[in-house]
Length: 375
Ligand code: GN1
Ligand code: MG
Image (cartoon, rainbow, N blue to C red; front, side):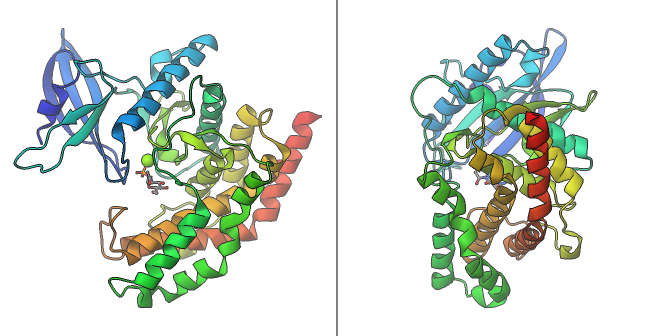
């Protein structure tokens, strides 16, 4: 694959200067490329969509296109400064499509699917939160995102990965992986398997409330890790939400829960330093303030009462997925070292324990915040 060749499919002006791999997502392949046009250099993000995971890239890009267009309209209404840096802007193909399909060739036996965005300059995405303000900025941005897309016109968005956050199904998938154990790996992860099985009740809680109509379906981002929000280098303000592949119908708490999962711990999700995993309460508090700043008027009382719980759910869910993937031979999440997905699962289950032991404090904070806000 030559990056320059792929770029040629899109309506990018100027001459190709350089390009290479960019970022550290686990699913798609992301590249950045610079072009020179009229004496100016501009950068673009080019991504190959992993179509084994996103089975319908055309439908996925219809979602992304609709969401980007709607965000832009809503931001113009707000109104806001820096419009072109506040939401992603697609670069279309010469045929006006949001998606480019590169036909199969001798080296590449299957077609590949590509898209291109304008690069948002002057921002950084972080893997680990250092300060409560970063957490506040990220949570506020994802809260704003939910608020802005809530009135998206037209039909229901396509589920780009069906049952993505259906934790009971993720639990069932782990049980199947344990039973199949195709590589004989289960024996080395007895403790993790026991932990998962003993905590099954976590998996059912939110969908149970949804079934009772206490928690509504909304349009959600579904992958709200800190690194999916760009932070402005100069102001430190949250600028733009990225990675829109999993924007689809979901529960608001999936987004808040994944923020908790990815922000409260001081170390990365694949670190083996389990003793360092802890819940940084000031970071949790900043997340709650940022998210509620945008969403307090929208959320139901049951959603608010489960904000703290949502972190435990999302952490447990990703832990189940990492463990199942380890047992099945690292088919889904890129493993860069032996037992990488087992280490990720161990890390996440330790964080579930920590979140469990701080749940009351987190709940008290949310309740006080809401009481004061309403007063
Ligand atoms: C994947 O590719 P990336 O890093 O944005 C995964 C998320 C997991 C995350 C764990 C489509 O996200 O659900 O939480 O890894 N995305 C998909 O790091 O499965
Ligand atoms: Mg993602």
